[in-house]
Length: 389
Image (tube, rainbow, N blue to C red; front, side):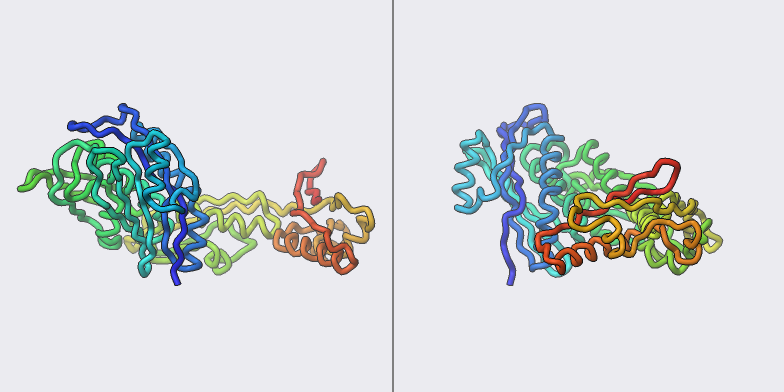
């Protein structure tokens, strides 16, 4: 069964004149909840994104010179008409009503700028996102499309096309654009759309051309895609082999990785090293030209030395001594005489997390049912090493 929730809001106020308005006219923006329809897991995921999506919406209105006025989470609880009345009380002239519906693997977002006076309202416009990660960009684009429908100037757009892409679907590119058939064209929006295509992370070059056709302007975007990956190479790695690192990078051969994907893969490698006691690791990713014409992804790794635990402290314990508690955990201080055999003193974040649970279980089993153990803090010890508290 699908559930409906009010997540975030989009609404804004503008005074409509017969001529196009400029962003400097200082229109107000009232914010009413964004209704969302999705199944359980997706609903929870989108609920977590609500704050970030709201920030995107507010920034989008602000960037156009409007003044956002957020409304409460329950503003739609008594219906749309009650929300309109509240928007009027806030001094709004328009309210933007929007919603998102999960349909198959796609997210469909709709929005309408409804007049609270005698001015005309916008059409109910829609935009789609193929992944939840693209929802912020879709929300921003919907705000721009809706405000442009009422206040945008420029020549009418008859057609929008794209070429040069072989791996990225054309519709995915078109969905990212603010310029659309039936809307208006100007250079500012064209520049903005070029940036939007670049932000997808799959292109090295984007260009736009405009021609006059029957019914207005034909807008064409020419793109040059990033190279498809051939091999992935790791250099400088001694503690982990190629297979170990490939399990965490999140990128595989024949992918076309975006800048975001590359950055995430670097962080994944760093986490692998850090969790195993190598917090000083340095990782740099670069794509070079391979012999087969595809890209060669190279990770340069400087592992750094393992930093050992010099001291383990406990804070807040009164009934049990530090020595007693230290016997209940796996993490241990380094013993210079036997560490090379026992492996003691190694910093292992997974082991630390397990130790928190072991200490809580020990206290609970001893009758301290309210006992809680916080996440351990790790600090540099004087003269080298680490202090775990």
